[in-house]
Amino acid sequence: MLKTFIKWLSLTVVTILVGVTLAVYLYKDQIIEQVLAEINKSLKIAVTVEKIDLDLLHGFPNIAVQLTNASLPDVEGNSLLEAGEIYIVLNPFNLIKNDHTIERLDIEEATVRILFDEHNKSNFQNLIESTGEESDKDSLSNLSLNAISLTNVRVDY
Image (cartoon, rainbow, N blue to C red; front, side, top):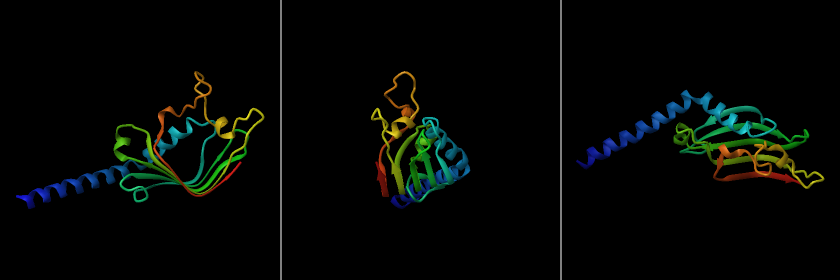
């Protein structure tokens, strides 16, 4: 009886994992497009990336959108961020529910340049689109970020 239960439980878990993995690969382009669209619609300037891919192992059991050689200029054209790798780690079940929670943002081998204008406003603050309703608040309301991991990141300010 116990062996049968364990056998069926194992089969169910493996079936769910294979199903989620298959769904991720079938909808790979849509997942990448959706993640980048949510990020870029809140920024005044789009993130440029040399290569975009999905990585199932980096954030296991979550999935990660891998951005290779990513850069983000500020509104003045200066380089705000240059990163060798950025991983946007997402829960695949949240994606199915259209929940845009970023479980973790891993930035590796990067340089961040923070500049301030004469009004003591940083180039990062100028980069975020304003909703028009509350000019001091950012419009990243559709995104939620749980954690950030920085590896070999240099910050210039």
